[in-house]
Image 1 (cartoon, one colour):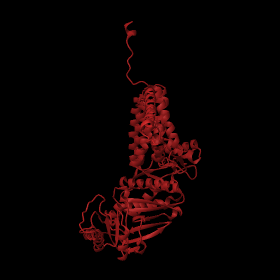
Image 2: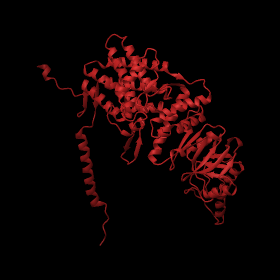
Image 3: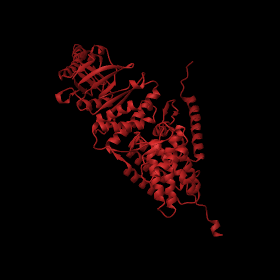
Image 4: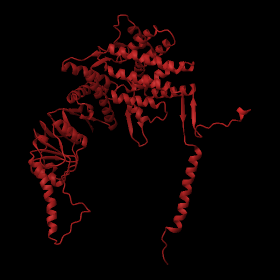
Length: 563
């Protein structure tokens, strides 16, 4: 009786939604699988694109996993984990964003029947972690190094990696053209870690083949004043002065107070203002620079002054472009024109202004430090150029990674099939439930070649059976075999130059396993919405306040016309 009389304990706020146990775990897994299904069709050279229309009316066409995940605006808490791993893959490696989401979704799909049968999630997590370690060791063992090759060989190998990445993008039709451009750009910046040293400028119009690479810096002509057209537009071996000051006629600050006893003194103040600007301009000319760039405005007086002295000037250059010019030409950005020494001036072999489409570009080429490059992209629609830029970003990241880590593996699903075979073989040596879990992990890895076939319209079952047979050969000669997108059969991916850096696969398997384990380890989801009554009260008080305010305003505030 006493037990029945005990009051109920209220722990959580009213209206809190708690779901726990098996059903909520299954619900989380289903949400993650739904996300994976969204990007599933974008995988590989025959992957489709997604058109995403946001609330601002912007349209994005993309098949880059990370871009799609960012734009989808997913609200489900468990599914957000997949968005995070896609972002981390993008920032860490640059490519493989769709792969990582697909793998995580597939790991969870394979775990679902076990969860439904009452297997404890921790047993699955333990086996998945073991399997991922074995898989990563196997990748490292199978990876081929490109270290110690000559520059020409290295360029060709890196070009193959870039072409593999670009083949699944919108600009896949011109992958060789862009791959060589990307490799040249990455080799130009050398060991420079800052990715913004490779600038990508977009100019609508023309076709893709009109795109070009500048070994130096190129930026759009800035806003110009009268006198600009009289300036020379081409210099050989010019000295370049970079400034962060305004070269405009500035009046005194509005709140400055000057007391004059004689009106004639006013002229001397005006003259002083003119003398200040002329002094600044004169110092720029005396420095010996032939090209003057400033982050702030260079007014019409300055523009005309430089034009009369055969000097090119550009004001309002963006911070990013100015820093890239400084890095390329060896100059330093100055915040004053006093005591400009020779060492702070930059130099380049050739400066010219060129017409690209309907835009004019200032181009600095043959720069001494050479640690910067600019890709000028051409194309029809704006969305197309945007997607081309995203594709090139992926390719640039991949080439940088391959250059640093210098190990590559066979693409086209070959490495996935080989790891899958290895894990299945390993699972047979394990006694206990773990054997089943590692087997399911191995099966999940086959999603990559299967999806490549599905997206290209081939019979996935037929192709996968051929691959399994090839990879099961005891000699190990079948290890590099993957899906042949062109014929619908199987082919040696290594011989066909379908390569990807080992670090992409290692990172993808690591991140996907972590995400799957994270979702599996959640046993309760607590949602804490604000109680509806509180919202109702807030709305009522807002309405009441508005009403009362209105009444008060009517009586007091409005002025009455006198009769």
